[in-house]
Structures are given as C-alpha cells and as structure tokens.
Image (cartoon, rainbow, N blue to C red; front, top):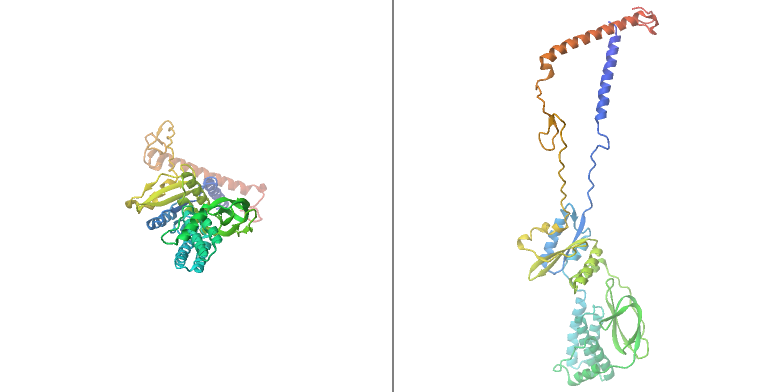
Length: 440
C-alpha cells in the first residue's frame, strides 16, 4: 500500500490539533479580563494624648497604640519619640528654676533675720537670676517679688536707703499684693518698703530689645521683639523673651529718666522637637476656654502630623475619654471609661473607622422563554424534559450513528484509493511515485 494516504492522515491530524489549540488560546483570558487587585488606601495615624498626668491613663495609651498597630485602616504615630512625648508624665520646665529660687529664698530670709546682709544680697540675687529663665506666671512673679524685697532689705541693712527703695519698688511692681511679715522683719524694713511702694519716680525712659520672641516687662507682655519700647517708668525692671520655639530668657535693666537703657540682645535659643510637643501638650491641658483649646489642639495636631486624636484625662481617679477630628464634629463629648471596658482599647477607636460599605442587591435579569432560575443569582436552565441517558445509549442514535459512520468510512477509503490511482497513472502530475522511473 502506498504511503500517500498515511501522509494525508498526518496532515489531517495536524489540522485538527491546530484548530483545537487555536480554540484553547482563544478562550484564554486577555489582560483586560484579569482581575485587578484593589489598592488599599494608606492607614491614617491617630495620636493618643494623655492630659491628666495619670499613671493608669499612660498604660491605657500604650494599649490603644497596640490596637492601632493591629488595625487595617488606622495606625499609631510613626515616630516613637513623638508618641512618648504625648503620654509621658508631665514635667514642668520651670520647676528646676523654682526649686533653686525657693532654696536661696530660705537662705536669704535667714541671713536678713540674722543681720548677715551681704550674704542675703548674694542669695537673693542668685534666686532672681534663676527666675529670669522661668515663664512669667503668678507663682514665679510672687517668688521674684519676695526675693527683690530681701535684696532691698539687705541693702537697707548695709545703709544704702536709695538702692533699697528702688528694689522695694521693683518688688511692688512684680506683685502688688506682696506685703512683708511685720513679725518676722524689723519695723524699719517694713516701713521703708511701705513708703517706697507708694512712691513713683517721675519721667520716662525707653528700652531696645532684639531677638525672636514675645517681650514681657515685669511679668506683663508688651509686644514682640525686635522693637524699641518707649514710656518705661524709671527704675529696676526685668525683661524676658518667651516663645513656643525658644527657651525663656530674661535680663535685668535699670531705666533712667529721659535716657535709653543699654540695648538688650537675646539669642534665638531654639528648642528641640520633644520640648515643642510637650509644650503644645501642656498648652492644650491648660487652655482657659474652648477657643484656646481648639487652637492648641490644631497646633499640636499639625506638629505631630495627625487629623485624629484620643484625649485621656482624669477626674476623681476616673479616666475621661474624648476624641478629636479635624473635620466635624471636632471635639466629642466627654465620657467616663468603665473599668470593665479598660481591656477593650479597640472600641475607643470606633469613631475613627470608616463606615461599612453595603453593596446594593441588584435584581436578577428575566430568563428567556422556556427557562427558569432555580435559585437567586443562579443561571437560567431549560424547563424541557431531558432524557438523562447519553446519546450513544439511545437506540435511534445507535442505529443511525452506526450507519452514518460506515458510510463515511467507505466514502473516505474509496476517495483516497481513486486519488492515488489518478496520481500514479497521470504522467503530468509533476512527480513520480517510485523514484525516477515513473513506474510502480
């Protein structure tokens, strides 16, 4: 038998398998059909601010930070130092200067009572110099007035009444409510103080201040630096520069009628980030009204880079919780944290979570005639009665399939045989079947 039918069979097989491969490739999903992974939005930081100086609140702040770390949409502050500055125990920056001034005041009082006036003057001057670096508050001004009085008393004991009168007036300027104890001090000292505090030198002088900050004169704010300030009462004064971005600094100056005092130049004195955060946190804690509190919260939020915050405070040994968002509603109402809820820090963060998105339920499209839907969201199926048997199990298909198959095979064999005879007997076919002889 010739090999040409075999060649033809091979060609037919290649065509059949090629068509099937092309069909398979056509069914592959295109890049446009592939699912695109959803892009997760960045997690929003939330600040936890402890305002009550309450140890239990500091532990709760750490627990809330842990819940933020485990959240899918929220997170704690990236800078651990910032987070610590917001929950650490409050430390008054002025306390070291106050402690030193209290200590030397006691020494100065003892020296005046025991007539050791030079020692009293040295101790009082040291205390006043320490308070130059403390924020001007009623407490620091009261202590400064007491030290100024002791310095004047020491000068009066040294037989320098004019110098003593100037210092007594300075003490009265710092704190008008201060009065020396008539039992503790000599009557002439008390009388000299009372007479000096009622007298006011005439005329005016001026001072020139340079350096960044707000200018305080004898504890009262008078403007910003750099600037020249006229109409200053002659006598002893203390000028201090105060600001969020600098350490408080002060200098003593004596103003003479009709003259400008020596220029007061202050260095920038910038502070580190940790101190800035603690100051902003303290300003939030001590805000006198709602407007000042809102401004202090905005400043602190910008400083640490957040738009949401949890505020923890204390009242009668209980934790008070408040939340803040830069958008409405701003500050939430205050609420007390129950002890049974202390172990559930994640619930405190609920106001910051985005609302749950509920997809609307779309109705199923109608099925074509002759079909129905067995269940919601299912495909339509035909309602016609279907014979469950395979087609080759059915008698009609068995007989018909056998006959048709036999006819097709017979026709195929006859066609191949005829084609082979034609090729073998036609010399013009363009090729030979058996080498170059053209014979079988």
